[in-house]
Amino acid sequence: MRVSMTVNGKAVSGEVEPRTLLVEFLRNQLGLTGTHVGCDTSQCGCCVVHVDGVSVKSCTMLAVQADGASVTTIEGLAQGGKLHPLQQAFHEHHGLQCGFCTPGMIMSAADLLQRNPDPTEHEVREWLEGNLCRCTGYHNIVKAILAAAQTMRGMAKAAE
Amino acid sequence: MYAFDYHRPTSLAEAAQLLAGNPEAKLLAGGQTYIPTLKQRLAKPSAVIDLGRIAELRGITEEAGGLTIGAMTRHAEVAGSPLVKRVIPALAALAEGIGDPQVRNRGTLGGSIANNDPAADYPAAVLGLGATVRTSKGRAIAADDFFTGMFETALEPDEIVTAVHFPKPEKAAYAKFPNPASRYAIVGVFLAKTAGGVRVAVTGAAPCVFRATALEQALAQSWSAASIDGVTIDASNLNSDIHAQADYRAHLIKVMAKRALAAAG
Ligand SMILES: Cc1cc2nc3c(=O)[nH]c(=O)nc-3n(C[C@H](O)[C@H](O)[C@H](O)COP(=O)(O)OP(=O)(O)OC[C@H]3O[C@@H](n4cnc5c(N)ncnc54)[C@H](O)[C@@H]3O)c2cc1C
Ligand code: FES
Ligand code: FES
Image (cartoon, rainbow over all chains, first blue to last red; front, side):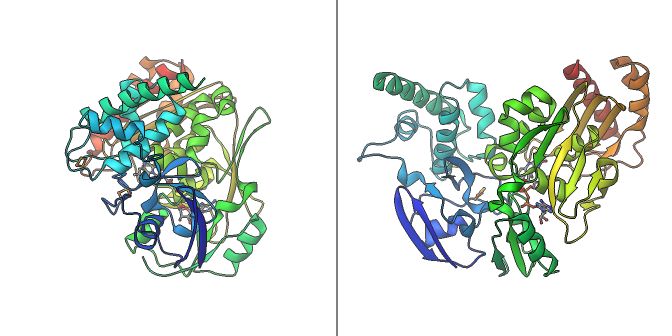
């Protein structure tokens, strides 16, 4: 089957089997290997991308289901060579160790911050229910997300 | 995953026709249960019929004082809906507690109740509120008749859930003791004071969601924590597994019932 979608602002299309997962299409056919696969059970969240503006597990969606959709992956966050505030904050607050969970963490957090620009620490921790990290103990991830939220609120204010 | 054909109907009539003509075909809603099942090769459908583009299966409307929610309405839509929060806040709170944000962004009401996982949350609300399940065959199935056993429902193989109608309760609340890893219910209790009496639905504890009639009778006499304390829950039909023994689940039913009572007011 032919699928067409917008990925990180660019129109793409490709030939897939109905059973091809969205994450397989992104990684194997488009070469966007920033989206990771960490489990077989839809539990780890390493594969989180945005489809039509909301975060989903790309390992639990068929590529054909995303036909016609607009998809954003971790590769689509940095603008004009400048890291997204979340990426910058993970860097500054040591929000990663091995980095395997990081793309999913950041894409999930980006969805939280677009719904709730000023979350409490508790709200951040609750939101990360579907993102597992085997390295950090989450503490610096939460710190990074709260710091990015603050930066982004500042940017929004400056833009007013 | 085994290979399958893929159909993407844009109307309910088309979906029903595809399903009727194809006994080995399966419906795909949010995919949050079925895609993991396919990935583990636990299912081998000839075709997958994706309900995702059928607009008439989606949406939340106020009807006869209660709510009618389309089968393809996502958990996140129910959780975030101002209408649901106003008419049946317990339902919005229940949806907010399902799985994680990404599961809620894809998973649907219809998929959850058609699947009837023994530990799923929505079946407790459907049964606890005495809701009605509407189908592609024009049937309106009372909740009491819908959930027939573990992963079993009253649906015929070629029947599609189209919507669920929830009457508005006087008071209602849901409390669950979640499995810390999956968030599925180890025990979940949905309590409602309705025009037709008190209803108490329990999920997670047994092979299928059920009504705790002893608790219903006690709460009908007196809507109080003391009534719950006075009831003995029979553990003989409850599940024992790596997560919890039957007697512990029996204990949790009363604890969750009291938490739901406190939340319902
Ligand atoms: C990590 C994780 C955590 C989860 N935690 C929870 C939790 O805490 N509580 C909870 O309740 N659930 C939980 N779930 C399950 C989730 O809520 C699912 O979304 C839900 O059970 C199935 O809905 P779906 O729309 O994804 O259906 P699908 O997976 O697409 O379909 C499920 C089944 O229902 C059938 N079906 C779908 N729609 C219809 C219809 N309209 N008519 C007839 N048959 C239909 C399909 O053919 C299939 O057999 C979790 C899932 C995951 C992956
Ligand atoms: S790869 Fe683990 S949830 Fe998608
Ligand atoms: S940084 Fe290694 S899994 Fe999170």
